[in-house]
Image 1 (cartoon, helix red, strand yellow):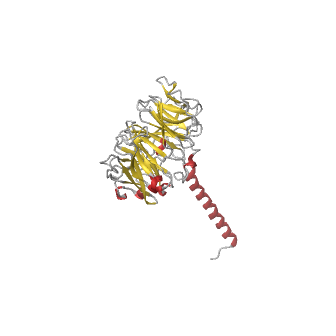
Image 2 (cartoon, rainbow, N blue to C red):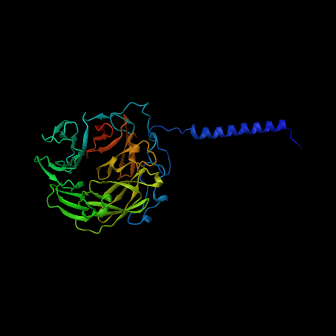
Image 3 (cartoon, helix red, strand yellow):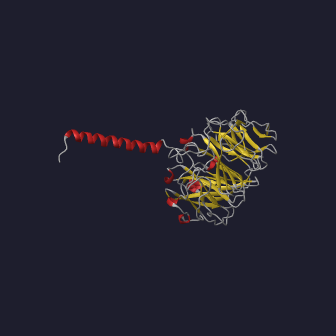
Length: 421
């Protein structure tokens, strides 16, 4: 039976219209039909942000890490769009305290700062770039000069844990150590760099960089530069050596060695030539933060499995437990945007959105708005605590142990802001 040309055209038109309806329905399902989520509600999935994914015991082999792609529990990281379960900024007035939604933020001072820190007594200290003085905040939040001396155009500050000493660097590469308790200063060698103080603030570890690689050393000295001792010959590997004195005084530095593009091995350096176990990290661009007791190490690395975006990890790091209990978090941010308030409580600034490659090129995130999260290692939860009322790109977080207030610096304005917790 033959079909007339006219009937063929009608059938083709009907099929075409049917396809339009079908694909239109699919597009509606994909892009316009949204699940209704009330504020605070969590979406049930295998990789919710309410807990820490399981992992292996760390150590020297990647076989100790479970999960696909060497990245356990990391399929749905928090780093894009408005965080799940939070009210939009347009629909809510800012809360005066951090409660998981839009939160009021206020400037602490009106001057640009450099190197703010929380000292061991819980006080805030910082360098004021506008007038060249160092300040501390008293119990009433008033800024008090730590010294009458003016430190013109300082460009880097490394504080001692006690907060009464600081190594101050200048654009011409000159460096001094200033003791604010005694108002005395000493000049340090200009070729020393990347300082880290001991827990008691009496010693420092640094890299001594000579004119040729044969004169590159990891050194330890008194905080005033006295009794300097060469600890390790670092030669041509200076860029992968990280002076970092652990609070428990077991480790003074780390260095990394590449395994392949997505893995590095971290080696730990002690004061007495200890043969510490190494551990693997799953990426490049290592940044680290010691816990307050020095028993765990928070770190961030980027990896091709994460589109070269940074991800937070944690691992045990005492002499006897290096590499154990390694876990990744569902948070894509840098360790430099985090801080330990206590040994089991961590606060982090997490970008709302990250472009692929941001781990390798951090400047891609310079205009990104950050939200604030808290990680509780005791309960295994990671929780959005505040969406700051403003587009802040947070470069550093400070949280005293009493956790009444969170302070942060904004990369653009270079001011200190506070959020009431």
